[in-house]
Image 1 (cartoon, rainbow, N blue to C red):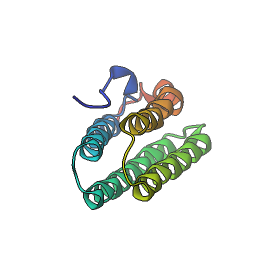
Image 2: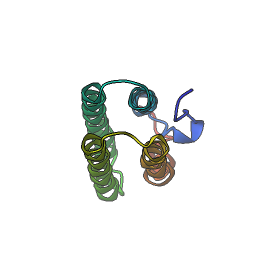
Image 3: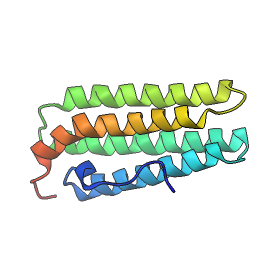
Image 4: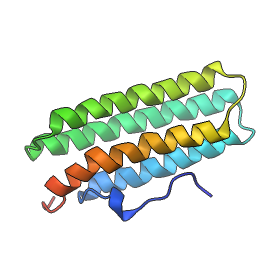
Length: 134
């Protein structure tokens, strides 16, 4: 059973962005599964790196759509993306520095990391752009 589950409230109404959001949910779930099973530390850190790259690429796509459509909250949304990237780096570094892993803490951090952005910035993006055709 995964840590996160896709919900329709996560949709921003842009098919390419929503597709990537679903893929990020899947990647976060795979990372959590790998980190909480007997996977090697190096394998988990490699997966963190893959997730970080996927998240960075997704943010670039989302920001491109916002620029193209003249989204008035682009600066604030982009700043939150930067904060999220910093947080995922912190999670990676904490995992790397630790001898073990606190599964509950990792679950809370990953869920909060993902859900908080969706409930604030992506919800506003959906309201502003969701009804626009691609």
